[in-house]
Image (cartoon, rainbow, N blue to C red; front, side):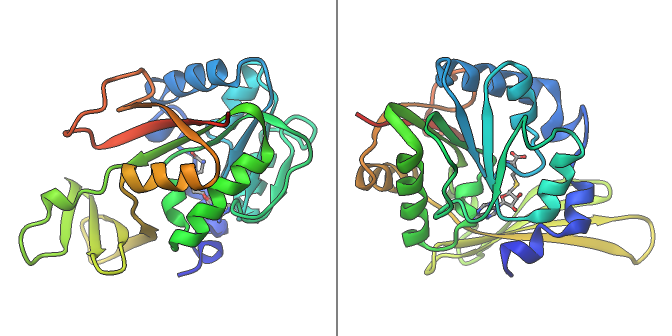
Length: 244
Ligand SMILES: C[S@@+](CC[C@H](N)C(=O)[O-])C[C@H]1O[C@@H](n2cnc3c(N)ncnc32)[C@H](O)[C@@H]1O
C-alpha cells in the first residue's frame, strides 16, 4: 500500500466532516490555540497538510501557514477552500521536500509521522523539519502511544472502536514495528467499505532520540492540546521539540 494510492480522489472527497469528528470545534479549537501560541508571531509549516483541517483555521487566526503534502487529490480539496497565495503547498514528501523561506513552527499531527514506514524516513522527517526552522524554532508532533499493552497474549490485533455500522481494528507486526489501521463501514446488507492505513508505530522515547539526532531538544510533552498531564495511561501525546 503506497500513501499515494491510499489518499486518492475518493478518500480526499470523503475526508472532511465539517463540524464533527476530527473537524469538531472541541477538537480543532484547542489545537489551533496552542499552535498559534507556539508559532509566536512567526510563520508555520504543516507537514502532510491534507485538506487543511488544521491549517485553514490556523490561517484564519492570522498565522501565515504553508504546507507539504504528498497527495494531489488532498491538495485539490484544500484548494476549494483557500488559494495558493493564502496557504502555499508543495506537492512532495515531508521527509525531503523543501518549502521556500524560514519558519518558527513546523507541525505534524494526526499520527502522520507514523505514515512514514521506515525509521530512516522518520529521522529524515525530523531533519527536514530542522532545515525549515529558524534558531529556537519548534517542531510539534501529535502521535498515539502504541497500544501493545491492550493486545491479548498471542493475538496481534485489537478492536479499537465498535459501534453499529462501524468497526475500527488494528493489526500488529511486532517484529517490523508496523501496525495497519482498518476502518470498516457497513449497513444492513452484505456490502462493506474498507479503508486501511499502514503505520510504523513509534514509542515516545524513540521519537525523542530521532529529535536528538536532528538537533532538537524536547521542550514539553502533554497528553493533549490543552496541556493535560502525560501519564502511563495516556493514549497519545503532543510533543514539542525545539532547536537551540
Ligand atoms: C491523516 S491525514 C492528515 C491530514 C492533516 N494533517 C489533518 O490533520 O487533517 C494524513 C495525510 O498525510 C499525507 N501523507 C502521507 N505520507 C506523506 C508524506 N510522506 N509526505 C507528505 N504527506 C504525506 C497523506 O496524503 C494525507 O493527506
